[in-house]
Length: 131
Length: 68
Image (cartoon, rainbow over all chains, first blue to last red; front, side, top):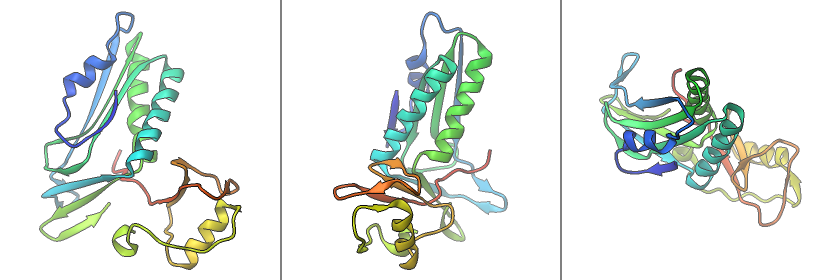
């Protein structure tokens, strides 16, 4: 499951999408909107993507992860306006054992954050800023 | 970057050319920032890759990243 969505992410559906009988370890990472960054209060975040490229980068990362960790993987990112406490991104990895599942899930979220063209604007009482 | 420059910018450049030439042309228009990358046809490009007619070129400012 590789998706960009505008509605709340169904975390359980993402987890189910990587399950398979031979895969004994499933790791799911959820990235939540924080209510503050340092001393800055966040009222909401606005996520925006270069969608065609974001999806193709997510697929490329997923393929690399599948090969490297022999994993089943999923990545879902939400776009639009999100409030503190909401889930912005979910990555999931299922592997034969837990060690590679943890490593794979970490690889997915790190690669997503460095290479997938998604940006967020923080909006708070002191104004707004793309970060 | 988009807030400052808008989402499209027209530059004139002879094709085919290298990615690094596109980046210099953008930089001379003030349309480049440190940490940005150029994508050609929805893939990140290296500076010696070629850009030709019909290619889709996009400036990708640093992505949302965040803490670790």
